[in-house]
Length: 152
Image 1 (cartoon, one colour):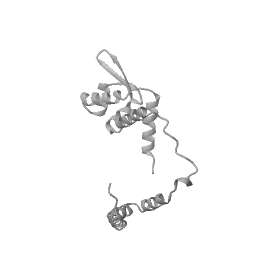
Image 2 (cartoon, rainbow, N blue to C red):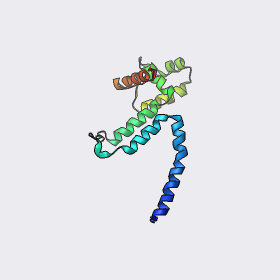
Image 3 (tube, rainbow, N blue to C red):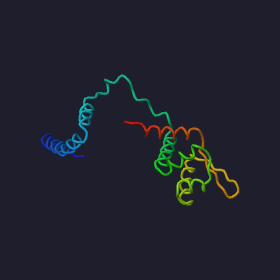
Image 4 (cartoon, rainbow, N blue to C red):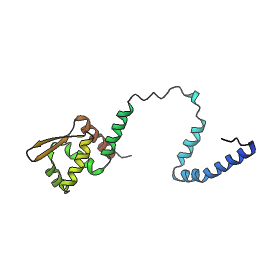
């Protein structure tokens, strides 16, 4: 990378800050506190911190699997199915009737949830019954709904 003489560097830096000005003004118009936060970040010196952020203790593969789980939960129709299944085991037909959706639509959603190990299934003759995989899933669903219900 070529070095710039001091005058050219000042010109480039001035141009860069001039280009950033409108963005900062737009951000301040949306949220006045964001400029104060950004200004404070520049004053933060690492040696002043008395504590350190701990290293990541969870293996990256587990983090990836958890992210996939949250992606599966991120669809409101799938989350609604999980909330219904929190009250017990139901077959695909019962879930389709309760939601007013087609069997194939419900089956696809259940397949996605099952692929992330959020559901268990049990076959009895022609019927396939689904339930939440375990208490962790039930707690996750209840916590998400409770958090979303809170007034902020």
